[in-house]
Each structure stands twice: as structure tokens, then as C-alpha cells.
Length: 214
Image (cartoon, rainbow, N blue to C red):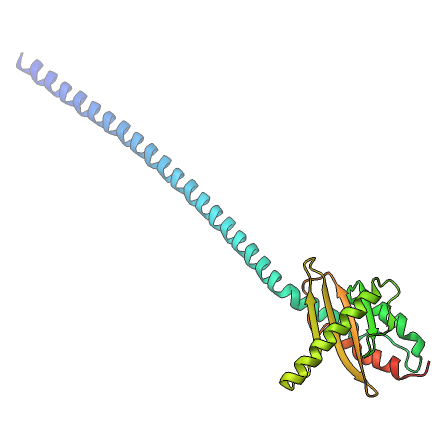
């Protein structure tokens, strides 16, 4: 009886230990599975954060690039016009080339009209496709008078005068002298980026054409 009780007790202890081991093993497996899932979720979350961060960085870079381009666009356009006008080919000694020269100035500068007037406001030449030449000549005369008044009051002679109307059209008048005559080269443009020095590179070519024989 005693031996049987001892054996029974020993067997119960073994069963209890085995059950405890199996229970612990199962709990360990569950814990490892849960830990694995947490690691996977954290990895997925980290990947998502990295992807979002990369996307935000790309958006910021694109926005910054666009802002820089917007700021530099007027400068780039001005330099393009200046360079192209300075490189215009002209034929020295042939005054009848004045109109084709104004045509090329209008094409390069994307001007609607390019008009040359004398100090009395009379048109001397205009580009072939120019419109409203008489009205533009009158406007150029008035702007030249404004420049002359400013010169008389302040002792500084303006070289160019710009006027922008309600329709966003810009009238640029460049005042210069050739053989003791005051002339005005006027351009009409719809480009709001037009600079006051836009016509300067073309003046040398115009002066050459004006001083040449007809």
C-alpha cells in the first residue's frame, strides 16, 4: 500500500511537471507569436513612416524648385531677350533695312508692336505686323514729355519709361539720341515680365541703320 502510494504520488508529480512544462511551452509559443506580430507591425509602421517622409521630402523639393523657377523666370526671360537682341544680324550702311530690323526685334522680344518716332512724335518706322501705330506714337510722345519734365525738375534724364494699363499690356519707351536728334523706340508687349532695359541691346543696331544712307 505504501509503495503504491509512493508510485502514485511520483506519477502525479511527473504528470504535474509535464503539464506545467506543456503549459509553459504553449504560453511561450503564444508570447513569441505575439512578439513576432508586434515586430512585424512595427516594421510595417516604420516602412510607412519612411515612405511618407520620402513623399513629403519630394513634395517639399518640388515646391521649392517651383518657387525658385517662379522667382528666376523674369530674370531668365530678360537675359534671353537681351542676348537674342544683341545677336541680331544687321546690314550696316543700308537704312532701308530698318523695317526688317524692327520686325526681328518684335519677333525676338515677342512684342506686338515696335515703333520708332522722332521728337515731334512722328512715326519713322514700325514693324510690319504692328498695330495702332498712330495711337502708340501719341502715347510715346506723351511719355517722352513726362521724361523731359522729370529731367527738367530733377536734373536726371530718364532713359526709359514704362506704362502698364488695365489690360496688362505694357508700353515701353526707350529714349535715345542719334546725330543730335532725340528719338524714341517704343514697344508694346503683353508680357508682365518686361523689363525697362529690354530694348537696350537693340539700340546699337537701330542707330547703325539710322546713320546709314537710305
